Length: 92
Image 1: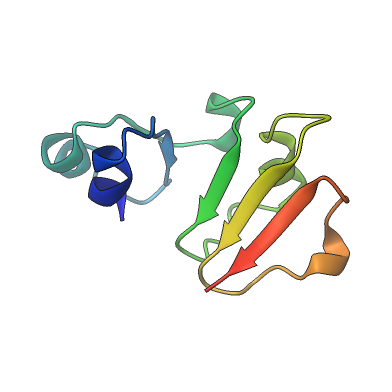
Image 2 (image 1 turned 45 degrees about the vertical axis):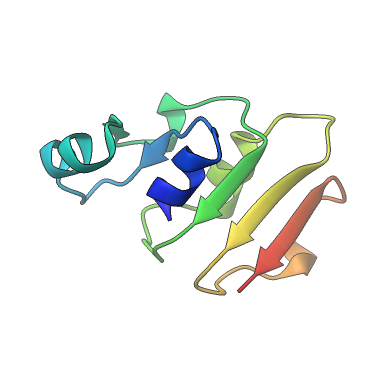
């Protein structure tokens, strides 16, 4: 998924407290962050793994405020009822 997004010219910030930072840096040329608080004001968040380390408030606080943004939940762990109106939830 990361490679496909990069091919589209999309700037990626990735957070994973468990990923091998060196492997991902070598493979995808990105710096993996360990905490959600290390990113700010993004248009889209993609939840690709169901880590319990992230809570919904932390995730949505990283999205741009007062703007329509997208939360893509690949693992289906979030429901629409939990989100403010300006966040569009996509499930796969």
